[in-house]
Length: 385
Image (cartoon, rainbow, N blue to C red; front, side, top):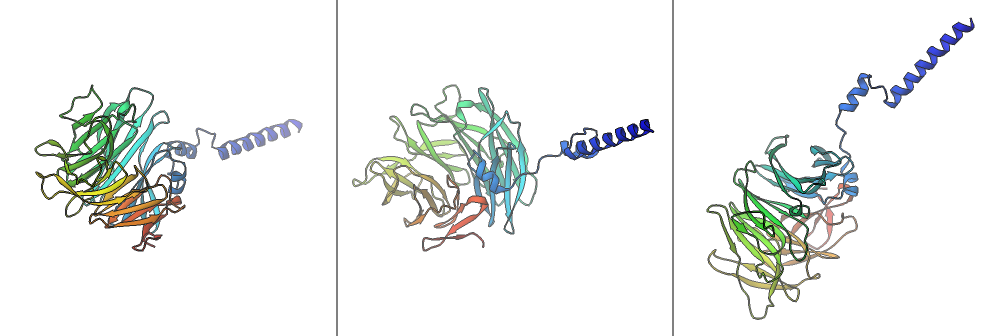
């Protein structure tokens, strides 16, 4: 009898231990546990990612549908969030091992589809840039191009500019001793194949053109096959903007007819697109000018000045408007020269993430995935609510 109770007790203890192991997910032969091991972790909410990511996210408003490209640093995933009916839906574009960390990323959308690019780097001397494509109406993203770059030429910014089937990709490294390594590629088939167009401060890289010394402030596709690269020059380089043409492939510095009342130009901001291109410029005393050109063969003429709050602000541009981000305000500069000043709300994430959606109209990404759009009177309201 005593032996029977001992056997019953052993069976009971064994069964209890098995239940505990199953509850903790420790039985590797359990079918359910095996499924959990193989299953890709579910992306966490956009609010959590925005709070803890070390990579600035990208915001695009595509056919009135907001999209955010962000890096989930805890799971090391590149995620595309799309907001549908006031809810964010996550799609993992790429998951990397923890030893291969994401660097800068970028996103661009057009009527024909969206392109995304991201940098992956570890501890070696070279890093990888990966480009993804999603056609219009498709739910799937696919990898269309990969390239390896020197470690010093990545990490600071990665920017896409597209118009039609022509796409441009700029990668820059961290500045050092007044220099910033730069690489510019071009694709004429929606990012399927690429060619290196220009490089700067990278003597070992051979490219058709050389980007002069300076810090790029933005790349903007003016029209199909045309791009303007804006610069904050360094050293003896006076070039503040370069125009590229895809066919035939050319590189030409942008020249200006500077009035005597305007100080020497020291920086340019991303170009404003629209019926005609406009280029915001900053002079030596911190005044903002707007330059336009009526012909490719004529110098750009300066026709407006406006004092800036900060000497070297961050900026982004879009259709008819440049968004100039200062310390406490956002200034919207129209292609006609109008300026609308907006306060920066504490609900916005820092650094600010914006998307121009029309003339003097900008959407700003807020904490926990909220979106804000400005009014014509200089205040803010929730976007699409």
